[in-house]
Length: 93
Image (tube, rainbow, N blue to C red; front, side):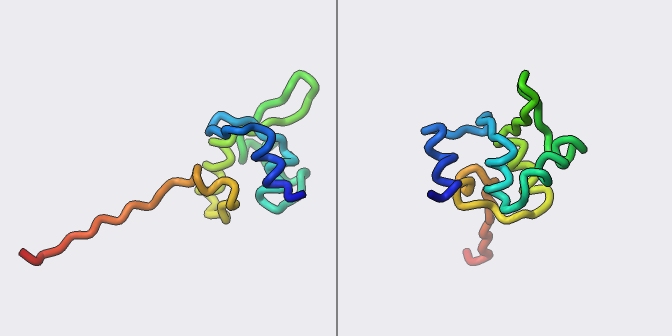
């Protein structure tokens, strides 16, 4: 089963406040969980620790990292990516 599908099944409605595990973040970004842990520990990616010591990352913080570092937006998260707006102006009157 695709890991992106598992994340979507975890919560039927994802919001920018959805908490992800570092393992889920790693699968979305196609990197190792230890890389995500380092980002959280260094403050590159804001996160918090559960009472059991596990790291959690808010979806809004993950999206901010993706935008800041111009990373590929995983298909699962496209709906949360900022939209580029184009203004078309015509001088034809």
